[in-house]
Amino acid sequence: MRCFYFTSCGDRIVINQDALALPYRAFAGETATPREFLPFRALHALRHPQLCGVIDGMGGYTGGDVAARLVAETFSSVTCPDLVTEPFLTCLLETAQARLAKEAFVHRELIKMGAVTAGAIVKRNHAVVFNCGDSRVYHWHDGKLSRVSYDHSIVQGMHDSGEISEEEMRHHPLKNRVTGAIRTSSKLTPLRLWSCHVQLNKGDALFLCTDGVWEALAHSELEAAFHTPKPEIALHEALRGVFCDDNVTFIVLRD
Image 1 (cartoon, rainbow, N blue to C red):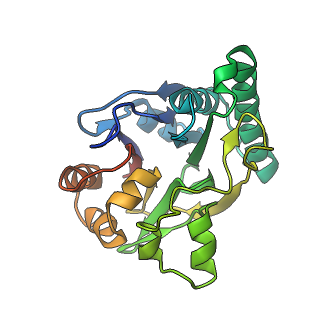
Image 2: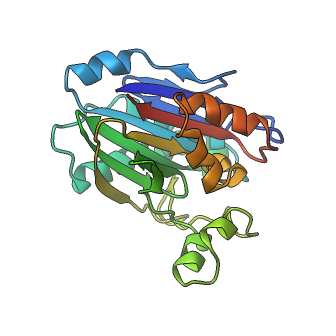
């Protein structure tokens, strides 16, 4: 399995408050085009469980970029067990939260900073995917792209109750209101975890992205990219063809 990643400010925001967690490497900044993280292939061949994640620093609060970087550093430094359990994932998020709280204790202007995240821990033909907030994980299987994460957001609740469609979630005025996040304290926003297991067959792929991606591109456009031999390139070209109102970051894990 190979790992490709991309992150950009988008077309409106000057600072990129997104970050990436790759095995033993945290990345914060910009990539002009999608890049392959070459060590992933070798580590995957050795059957070590590998954690990859996208992290979206919360806009509207001072230090969103700091929060995203700290969460990415926490994720990239962890050694995952062969058997990934919900308590392990909860501990992972709580460790990231503790790092934010420690930073805010020293720099009081960062007291309200926070981030949302989505990740996947992959070993051979199996993955445990998780999220906190409205970053997402999709599974490409048998010609279809399906969301396997669950948004912690106001609009997700509205979708669950039948008030709005999945497509309407992209443009709703409350689309940026999350109900779960990694903050300096759970009193600001609860720390919520969603996780599930995904079986990976030959030809399958996992797609992790921040909300800037799934808001900019309709589900049909995301799915169309995975009908191409290099979905990471198709996704990049699709994002270049639209106005990206937010930072955009994604990871593609594929054969």
